Amino acid sequence: HLIIGTREGKIQVHSLPSGKLIRSWTAHREPISKLIVSRDGNWIFSSGASKTAVWEVATGREVKSVSQLNPK
Image (cartoon, rainbow, N blue to C red; front, side, top):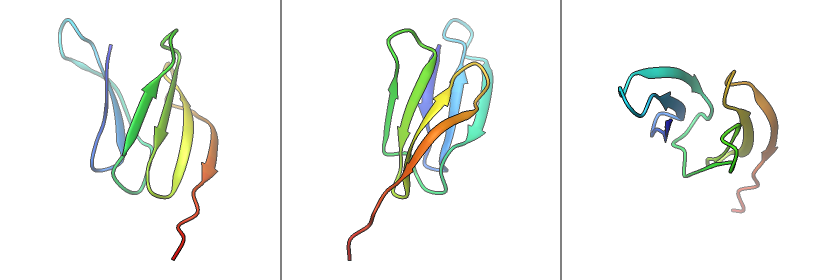
């Protein structure tokens, strides 16, 4: 799979051989700044300005999130 984090805050999962979009969901209200995929490919860790979250790849379900503090 090819997994992409977009400026619109979406996570997209594509089939690598065909390029076809398999799944897409809105993960953040802002651009995704970091995206990590677990070694087994089952989990995605994403980070944006307001939160860091863990997602289940098969369903796009948010498993856990932590709000980020923005010091002024």
